[in-house]
Image (tube, rainbow, N blue to C red; front, side, top):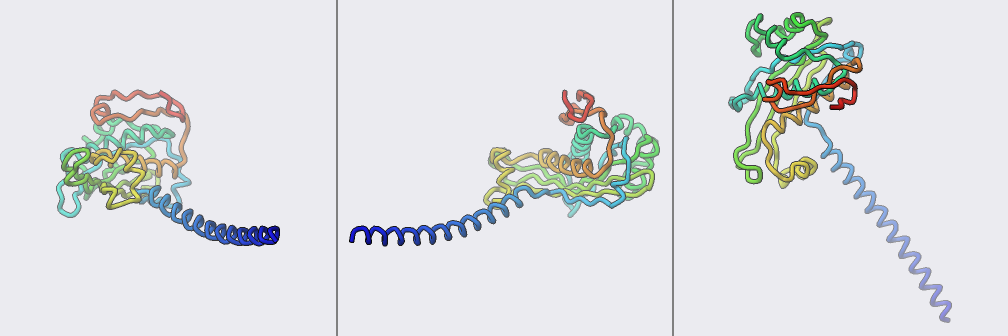
Length: 261
């Protein structure tokens, strides 16, 4: 009798375990699906880039970075030094990326002195003129449309920093813009955007400055362009630095694809 009861109990436990196992599997699938969705959101990029098919056929050995120009959008004035700050970061990241020779910024500035002042209206034209003047395969250039500094402190900002810029890469040989990128980001509180958890943790929950957002965008954009081009090896790679260090030429450099300093 006891044996019969024990057998029945074991059978019931087996059925219960199977039921629980099925529910657990369903729950696990749901959790995994949600985790994947969250991961996709966290890892999403704020740079929207587009490259023409012919970019894969280009051989790029030498590039120049033309200073970005201010093009305020929506009537909002840019914070002082906006274009200079994003340009400095762009030059630094392009030099760091390696695989191409980067024209020194002093040489670019000297060439621009021979040309009409660069504006939004003649931006593309001046980029091609600069490419001729400094003998490069292509020029990276663009506009800064929004550069708003945060209002407040690290952990109590009344208004967040916000940055928007657009970049282009023009190929001298074809005279065609073969790549474009647009970056736009305003920092949001974690309560407003739970998918920004990665940045929240990385920044220790603080409100960042505009140049930190710009650095993130420039890094993403340069990495995207760098991956689309055919590049050479063993060229100078510069370490990144502050805008002041860039202008004073204090960056160190070394050769090789690993960028060891």
